[in-house]
Image (tube, rainbow, N blue to C red):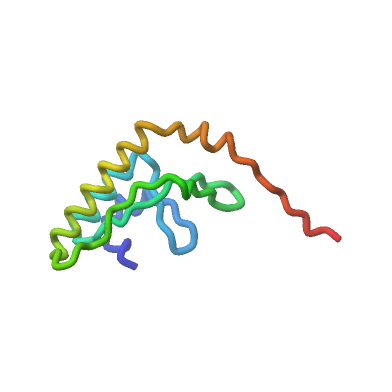
Length: 114
């Protein structure tokens, strides 16, 4: 996995769910900078809450980069995608009360008892 190219100090802060990596809000910008320094594109992501039984993703909120442009060099794409995601991440954090969002979720409990 490309994420394994990140420094150990950055990977140590990651939260893993299957093959997905996620980082706490206070580690996101450091992670993006580290990815950029090793030539990894930052496609973006969504805020998530890790729960004991799984992950709840706020799929309606995101900080994503636009796709690679025709003729865009890899180096330029790495730089631009990192810049776009950082800008969108900062905007998302500034305008979103994540705890309030989570408190509005309605959980459905499924019973498998017969």
